[in-house]
Image 1 (cartoon, one colour):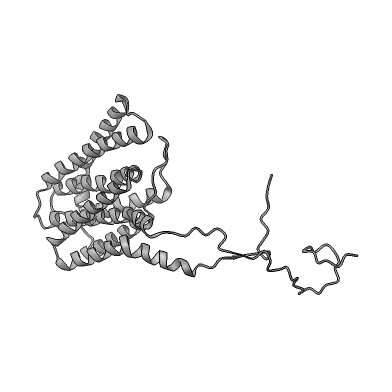
Image 2 (cartoon, one colour; image 1 turned 135 degrees about the vertical axis):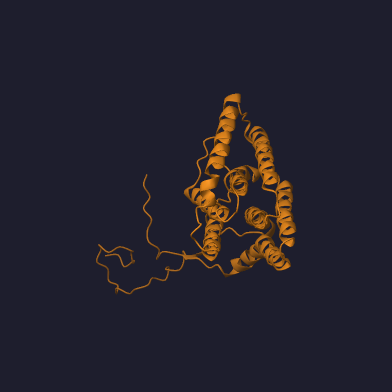
Length: 289
């Protein structure tokens, strides 16, 4: 009878139940699947989050000006139309340069038709949206809006687009867009006239429905352009908030700086505390051939 210990239960062996062989720790592995992060690639990856949060601030500042009636909503409508045209041109250029696809006339006609339908639908629904929360207090609206935008940030898809034309949206990104659009609806219901509601909802579609789709393509452009785009988003949002409140501007600046530069540094620093141990005590993983 062999005196070597075997890790089996079906064989009778002359060893106690709590026997530990000398070779037990010979196959010990620490952080076997660990890939260390470096600082600047993490900063570049965090730029996407900075862009998204900056777009939320831009939207909230736009609502504040419409709520105070300090901005002309008709100008915001034209800005949204120009954003759509520029975004569609950039989308076609990225499709052609990155993937070699060309948008044909039929697809352009479908996009134009869908845009006109959305435009007319918002125009028709603006009177309904304006009175949607007439019986709800403003405090409840602000709290609900804050919760919805936090949900939007947490569920947003910050990854790049795949090299395919049939790129299906993830469930979390769809939920993120729904949360942002719901927040836009409840905010629009606090405005005083229909044209302001229409302008705000049209602008929200650009910021929370179309811009995230375009951003998945923009993640594939060179790093310098992505960093420049992030600086533009952050600069515009900080400039607009400076016209409302210096306190809000300082809080926003600290938040964006921490997300872009502080959080990657914390993650790089925390890597040294990672200690994943694997060995023969792990549950066996079946391999199906």
